[in-house]
Image 1: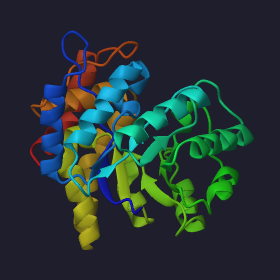
Image 2: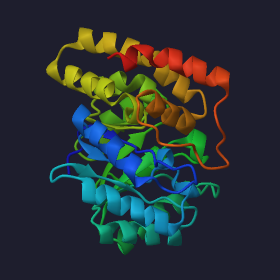
Image 3: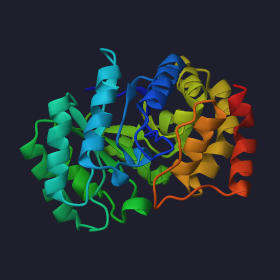
Image 4: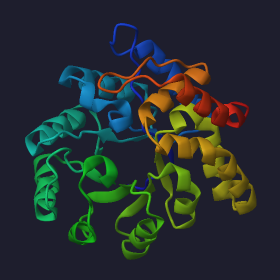
Length: 292
């Protein structure tokens, strides 16, 4: 399975009563499709899966699956703290129609690398899906080591790794060591152009919820071979991307959707609202993107 283009790590809209707002969700998905995204990644960390019941996670996966057109890539986030729960979530996604899942190391438990290898092997043995690994050690407290990648390098069902460590040297190493085996997927948004240069053909992108046209234009421009124009685009995007990486990522993404005229509600606790100063800083950085 070849991953390509911009695939939004989708927010989950909530209404004023804290319920999933599917009307707002549809408006957002239509906007993203019009901008040129290539697929959908629901129930990742940007989608606040950690705050949702199993019934809500099922409803979100089903809604996105029903919306998707043939040919659009579908990747379900099925993470959970325990292997048993991950298998249950992955089996549910498979039943709905997702053949690929995105899995970070289970949060809180901080498994060792041998434990993490056994975790991924258990998921693959239990459910017939493809796997995109997700490396985000700052959030998960666990790394995905090169020993682990070596272990799965010849497994045709481990198709990629979303690399969100923010360490460009690591991305280059992944691209060099696993070319033809494990696809490098951009996950460090403020250096997305660097990832493209080093072989990432796809971008699982939280910011595309609120800056879809700009992200898709950057991807298309790079693919066209106009590196100078792509560099200028990345300069325009960089400040907003960097502010997102500085903290309160999901809250800022949702506020950016509001700035785009696509309100998606507040985040669920424990994620709290932005301060007025945080809103002003991000709103200022978003101005050239809103006028894209």
